[in-house]
Length: 119
Image 1: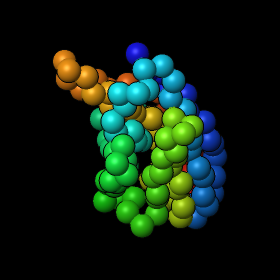
Image 2 (image 1 turned 180 degrees about the horizontal axis):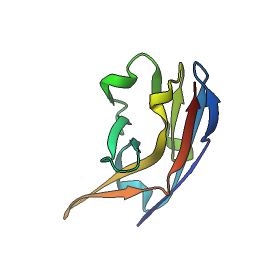
Image 3 (image 1 turned 30 degrees about the vertical axis):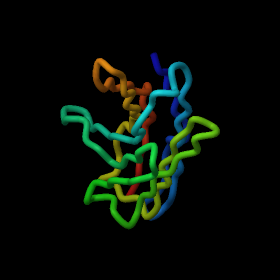
Image 4 (image 1 turned 60 degrees about the vertical axis):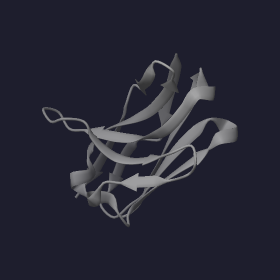
């Protein structure tokens, strides 16, 4: 099992910045990719950014150039630096970890942290 604990959400004005953090514990040795998704009530959860164990990154088009995902393997943590925030970035942000085993890949989720961007 993998436990993910997020922090860093909050209320910010448009154009501002926030940094989300996510710390993993448990069976972390087999974690492959880590990343962030977001969800607005009534809509599906969508990928924001993810980073592999090798450092490869993938971003959603709507955050390219504004958000940056990073990972600290020594701290078993992943971060999301969010700059130039827009009201449409308002959502619950969820940390995700993919654990790779012989039986397949398993997804783990944090409890979510709310980000609210005011206009």
